[in-house]
Image (tube, rainbow over all chains, first blue to last red; front, side):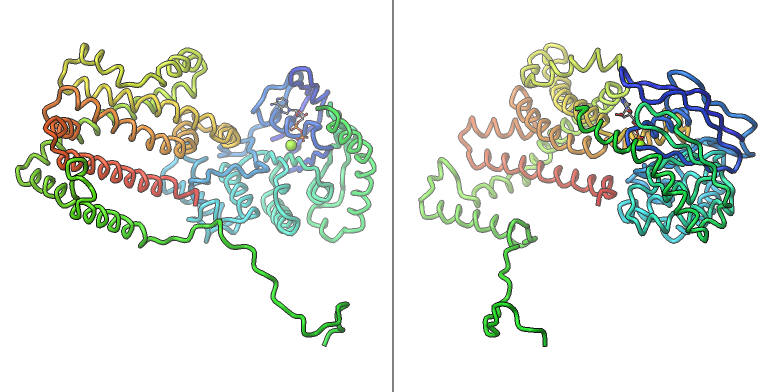
Amino acid sequence: MELIVEGVSHRYGPTEVLDDISFTIGDGEIVAIIGPSGCGKSTLLRLVGGLERPGEGAVLMRGAPPDRSLNPLTYVFQDFALLPWRTVEGNVSLVLEDHAMTAAERREVIDDVLARTRLAEFKQALPRQLSGGMKQRVAIARALAVRPAVMLMDEPLSALDSQTRELLLDDLLELWLRERFSACYVTHNLAEAVRLGHRIVVLSRRPGRIRELVRIDIPLAERSTAVAELARLQQELWQLLRDEALAADRELADAG
Amino acid sequence: MPAEGPAGDDDDIRPVPFRGGGFRHVPLGYLSPLVFVGLIALWELGSRTGWISSIALPAPSAVFAAFLDLVETGMLWQHLRASLLRLVVGWTLGTILGIGVGLAIALFSVLRAGLAPVVAALFPVPKIALLPLFIVWFGIGEGSKVATILFGAFFPTVIATYSGVDNVDRGLIRMGQSFGLAWASIVRKIVLPGAMPAILAGFRISVSISIVLLVAAEMIGARFGIGAYILTAGALFAVEQLIAGVAMLSVIGLTISRLIGRAEKRFLDWRG
Ligand SMILES: Nc1ncnc2c1ncn2[C@@H]1O[C@H](COP(=O)(O)OP(=O)(O)O)[C@@H](O)[C@H]1O
Ligand SMILES: [Mg+2]
């Protein structure tokens, strides 16, 4: 399944947040979206997943979602959004309970995704007992449980410390190599973008416009060894973003 | 050995002074029963020596004798049964209705606009002022008493519930929507548990209001019940019976507070 964002503009009251955004997310492709903070990345992701309606333009799906996909467009949130009163298992179960499946089938799916995210032994743990990285793995397991066609990830690693982030980044890479999921990966971290993105959408400061669409031809499997090349790319992206980030920073400071 | 410090005085070594103590509670579970026993013993002593006039405040032993008397005549059970029945029925109905209305106000804009001002207007009215009205409506019997308690429990529960729902993390609700959960599932599995801490905190308030109303209602035309017992005792200047009644109310209050504490442990253990 392909996801097409077509001429999307959006405003909140008088503030213009997004201006004429168009790009596509192909099957099995990870599109990273970077931009200075406050430029509308989260808004864009909410529009893409249908949590809000765009003021102008449209978000379209082409082709059928994969077989047995329970929730084609599935989010992974920055703050994990786990129910604190449910165990790891219960949190995954939550998103399956509204679908017609037997308790045994549900248990099978839960065990499967928890094994895939290496969480099997923490099944009964409550969120407060888990570290940030573990919580995000639970959220990823929950997303996998509904067999998404496209994962919509809003700064999934930004709430984590840098070492955990590195570990989880490797986890995500490995997961993609196994499952070839498609994703729209919002981040303000350039290193994440060049490690995970097949293509990178660079947004300007608010109102977010597409500054540049960068394609990275190094296969994801080889990203961890192509360090020099990625560093160069990252530097290029930073050149693009630097002025925007600076201006955005000033803007926020005097926009009371 | 490291080089000598700038001060150069080897003898002048002392530990860093500790400044971090206090402002923290250490559990001293044995202390509160001791204080209780001590107070009662002092009181008994005061009464025996005549320091405390037995007309104003009878000795604990006299109060206990009055209590035993109640047990032996079987009246304890009569009074307790009448009071607990009113309390449980009134509070339970008020709480169920309160949670329902509170949820409705929190979830539907129309109801919020329509009902929230009504609730806000009625909440501060002391419900005891409505008792005469309820007597007119429901008669002097159980109906008016239960209705008073029901109303007393209803309003704080409504307010606790809807402010609890208002404070549920919007991010969790959005998460539910993003996974395509049904509206009813979001309410039952996300909104309600999220509002649970506020609802249970509301229970503490509604229970204490209910006990106040129970006693007040029983003082107006009831044959049985702890309130009636206290009133009769007062009329007869039987102060030791009066105090026994008050002590029973204290025990009921403590017991219910324990039960709510249990419920909090059970339902809110996820908060750690
Ligand atoms: N629900 C909303 N109502 C009003 N303004 C909003 C809302 N959501 C976001 N904004 C504004 O839109 C802009 C973009 O926000 P956001 O998409 O969160 O940026 P980013 O994720 O890139 O940091 C910000 O200026 C923010 O204040
Ligand atoms: Mg954001």
